[in-house]
Image (cartoon, rainbow, N blue to C red; front, side):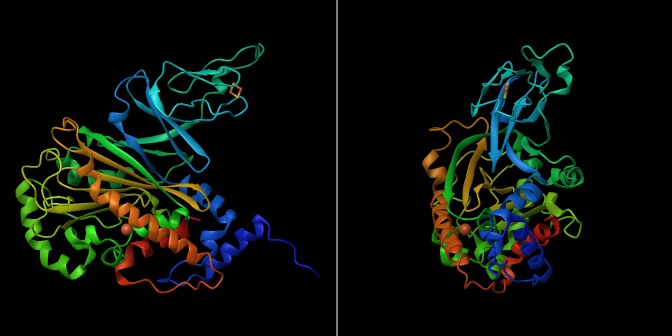
Amino acid sequence: MTSSPASPHDDIQIMRDLVKDYRDGFALPRHFYTSEAVYEHDLKAYWNGSWIWAGHVSQIPEPGSFFLFDYGPESVIVVRDRENTVQAHLNVCRHRGSRVCLKDSGTARVFSCPYHAWTYELNGRLRGARDMGSDFDRSDYGLFPVHVRVFQGLIFISVAENPPPIDDSLEKLAPLTEPFGLEQLKIAHSASYPVPANWKLALENYMECYHCAPSHKEYSRSHSLKDPRDMVELIEPLKERSLQVGLPTDEIYWTGSDAPRPVADIYYSRYPLYPGYKTGSQSGELLAPLLGQLSDFDGGATDLQIGPLNNFLVYSDHIVCYRFIPRSMQETDIQIVWMVNGNAEEGEDYDRETLTWLWHVTSQDDERIIRHNQEGVSSHGFVPGPLAEMEWGIRAFYHGYLNLI
Ligand code: FES
Ligand SMILES: [Fe+2]
């Protein structure tokens, strides 16, 4: 008897068996990074079932301003409607499915489909459809709504019918991030680093600093996260300084990680930079005006995760936002957005190149190590090895991921 090629259905069955046999505290088997069926399933079950950071309110300052946010096969229109509310719609025409909006960003009065010109209001309602007969009811064919949460100016979207609960976690987080004035930020620079690897490998790389010392020379000079012993030594003096500049010193660790749907969990922890560093700069000196209500630099940086897909690194004078956007099974965009105080002027208050230096060089390193990681994991000879203690973040991610898929 000859064996037939595996169907996507077999592929998912293989994945289910692997989940059953998964050894806690170890890396995931290669199948999770090499199977098209698993990738499709990741998008449907994990990405579409999560909250995703789409952007910032400063990108849509007035009624009609919009931008597109895309991942995998999905495209979402994020728009400020006439009532000044941030809304999001699936960018898929209700007639025969064309993309409705083709521009990355701009200002619109309506969204008109380029195919047969069905026209939608900013709030998604269908306004006009030519020659559809007398019993056609336009109110049945609005753009599919996408859930939105705006947290201190950060816009999160979820295409799930019932997105995971997030409001309680955001409420807990609010007093901790309040002093940074996130709502008043503006985007200073965005960059994308495409990497030929599965999105999980890119995300996992960001979730641990076990690789920082060997792989990130520049980062390791200034960030004590690369060595837990240094962190322990420097953390108490940092806490004193943080309180002095007006920052609460509470931490949040994955508020509901035992819940069946941990994808909306939040992590907040401020850690010390090495002495002589005010912020994530090459010289140690400041890069931009202080954020929000901070009275001075405390020499710390906050690791903030809002759901495992959305990462923010909050220095005292700028924030760096990360996403790892799946484009195909082994193509991922490492997207980085640098934000500064909304009234800071480029050239006067900050220099774009100096501001972005650290995470530009660090992301180039990451692109390389993630690429080599995929190459190795794709080998049939790969056997998942044990995680180090410093890789606890990956372990937490696997728990959430394996639960959800
Ligand atoms: S597909 Fe949009 S109008 Fe036909
Ligand atoms: Fe890295």
